Length: 82
Image (cartoon, rainbow, N blue to C red; front, side):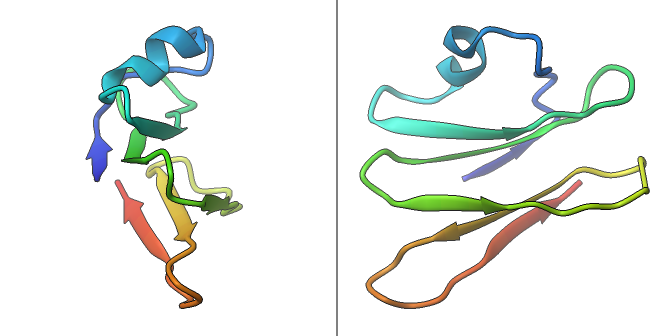
């Protein structure tokens, strides 16, 4: 599940930033780097193999989080742009 407007930032300790999900879920964040607010997080079951894709852009008006879950040998990319 993707969540936007997390208001999380990179300086938060993982115990706080990762506490937004139930105990059997993991969290991956894309923090908003300019100002306050913003941010995207994805919560997923811990047993799911997941990797993130790095998106490079000079644009500072949106967040983008792309994930690649391993699903029974299928190629799947999921993303959120906010």
